[in-house]
Image (cartoon, rainbow, N blue to C red):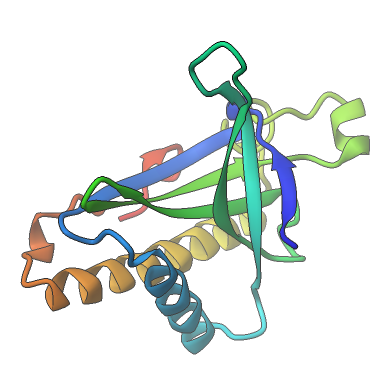
Length: 173
């Protein structure tokens, strides 16, 4: 059983997404390829876990319930305040692929006033931690891009048209 995570959207500090035409039904393929590519580059640094994420959004209707979606959570014990959530879900005949980097300071850091806007997102990271965070995000981003490229190539599509740059304070590409 996958763990359920309540995501507060203000914790998202970086993101990226793409839509793969005709990619419906290929989410597990994207997840597996991404994990394998990460493990090829840095096998001991990362941990992976399938999770269900809730954001507080509800389905439409009279008896609506909270929406939850599955994600592949990628994290490192060294940078434990930062987690990446990789999503791949069918959108009609297409596949929406995305990732979100979150800043989730632990209880004591929150009590000291650290928030995503004061810790990480506005360069309050120490130099080495910022360097490691950039490398971590870039490695996961490139691994997901490689998986997207493989899938698109197998579907006869041009990967060069995919926007590689993330949105946020790191701006990885």
